[in-house]
Length: 191
Image 1: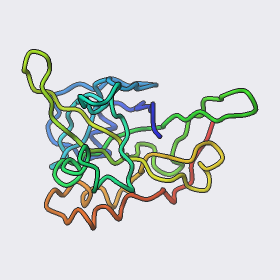
Image 2: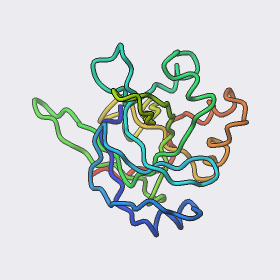
Image 3: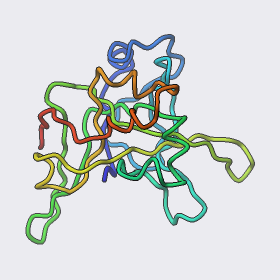
């Protein structure tokens, strides 16, 4: 699961990291991003936009902030989005709670060699109560890698930088893109 994350990066750092074009939208450094927050995403063509975190499905009691990699191609809620509306979710860390005895300790987890990393995301458009369209995103999760396993059995899909363009390519075969949805092999920094 990925229930909170951080994006402690300036507009310039994001511009350099993702080779972004013109950036009309401002970027606020955030030490902690919560579900339903509007936050920066990277779309095909290296476009930066802000959208709301969490799919807002009528059957769900709360926003669907994560989609499981194992079933993302099959589940009706996520399948079409994965096939046609993928995005990158920039982050500098994600948070997970480790159960230690009776306590739950909040852990901040970064990637050692990628200061700003990309989590695999998917998009969906909804209508608010006034009929105005808005776009929401969900973060794809996978099984925990060896480092994360002691803390939690799930983690966000962290894409290798060289795989980001292929992940964003909406014309790519979804079955081939799906193969990117695996636990990261990069070393994690856990605080």
